[in-house]
Image 1 (cartoon, helix red, strand yellow):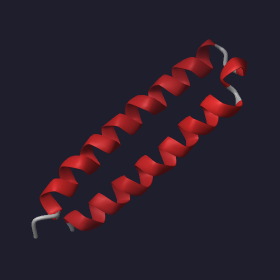
Image 2 (cartoon, rainbow, N blue to C red):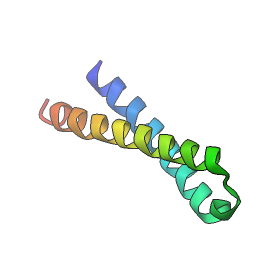
Image 3 (cartoon, one colour):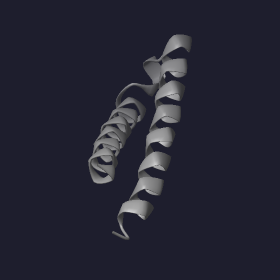
Image 4 (cartoon, rainbow, N blue to C red):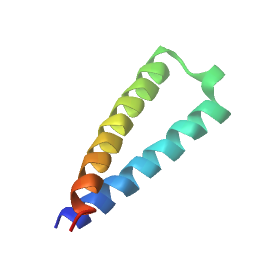
Length: 63
């Protein structure tokens, strides 16, 4: 069960990272105030999933 959660979090983190990189490369100058808040929220959610993936990876790696 831990491995399923680990891989799900990993896929979500990768998808968020791709989305963040796309925003930075394609449309950073086009963002409004709400767009900057949206980007900041995505970065925080990405960091949460990346941290969760890191700690789950450490725990599932020893099995």
